[in-house]
Length: 356
Image 1 (cartoon, rainbow, N blue to C red):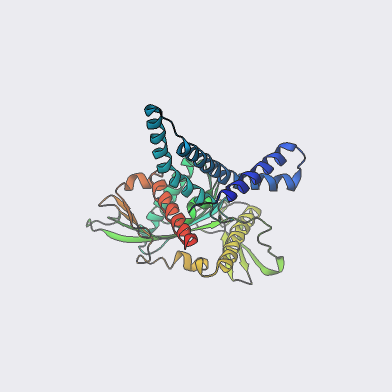
Image 2 (image 1 turned 120 degrees about the vertical axis):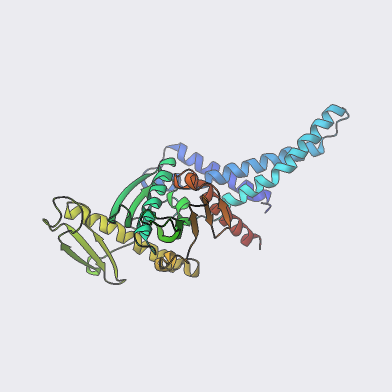
């Protein structure tokens, strides 16, 4: 997509205006926050636009050059070839930078992983996935805080919910939502047979309190004694909290903390996130169905990605990409290659839609 010169000038002018406003020292409070946010969003577009403007100007000057000196002419022709080769990629980078962004891309996210088909092996795989995301978060400088977990008897997770905060969390993790399938010999299998199990992953952007308004009259809150593993306070204090959102029927249970107030605060955080996800799904219509449709039923046939241990490979079925580096993916760093490929595919589809 070729961006008109007039549009490049408008971007440069808008960016210069924002720089001047922020440097003036006259902005305070909400005005400063809004201008800073606009600046951060426009900066990559302005930088890409400036690269295109500079390359176009240099190319135009060189093409007009009429030098009798053979050496100078050869150098000019070499530079023209370089610019003509590099300019399309610079213009594509600008087009990508100008694509409309999901308003939630810069937000923290709630990561929910649940064991699906496969019993104990599925729970162990859910734990493997959680550790993969923990390591990937560490690679990106993000913070992971466990909100709640339901551990299995042999060390896996039937369910685990965590809050992930940092720069660009949802933008990178949002393509992880779906059913993940594993093929391997379970530790519980004495015959050495390969089993197929699955776990569901849901990545939900965290809302602000402004995004989702929850009225007290819409909540049913039950307090009871916690059960399961958790130390001496379990079954001795009424600290567990179950919150039911009456209009939607959503239920959140939190019992990991000793304090009833802490459990209630975490339960409300999860509830607010799930309600915001429903709100986003309604707003986006067919492009993003409700959360239940996003993660599927947990059946191993509904997969977005397969982790095959005997062959040491990972396949993302949405883009047909297979990497023979399973250990590296599960260790965290290798996951970046899959996520970058998914982001690139999404950008290519959106660019094609704009061109069409």
